[in-house]
Length: 60
Length: 203
Image (cartoon, rainbow over all chains, first blue to last red):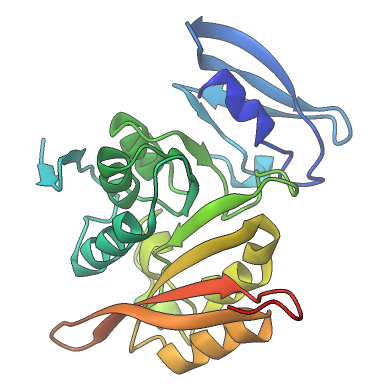
């Protein structure tokens, strides 16, 4: 995902702001990392450039 | 690897992902017809990314897509689509608006014993009346539509074109059929929906 996708992403549960933690990046692309929702205390993974915004019970 | 070339786009297909079919082509043509350079475009449930890729190949738009199936999300990304793995609008901020919102929903009436195994079911299963996803979409979509924005929704005669149109009208949207094609056992249409103009405003 591009870093400016942060302007669009929200926590799927509370719709609140997320905090981006980058593990691996390539220029403007985030390849892996996490999106953290401080209100829900939940982490959403970014894997192979795709943010996974499914609630934990639906993740594969 | 199987690829499809259509209107300057090259789309790779993948296992466990809905292969583009008549519905995808009809919606892609309508989307290119309504997209203009500079628009913010959102596709819900992009699958392989076919419709989005065709739009991106023909218009200079800022496009993002959502998809729940992990195989489809990976496929769409491999086709150059900025994809969020989420259920419909769930991972998108409430205050974000788009000029064009496109959705080829799971629209087939589906009973328990007609479900297909695995993630692919999300591509077909519209619930008992075929309108489960469309009801949710209709309820949510206005919140993400920019003033003057356009929604393009593909449905089948099997889904109930009149019922879907009325559902969208109930949320204050104006609807019009802008494309259609007859297939073997159904008619596919693209419903265009737009927000009501403000009181006193002439359209």
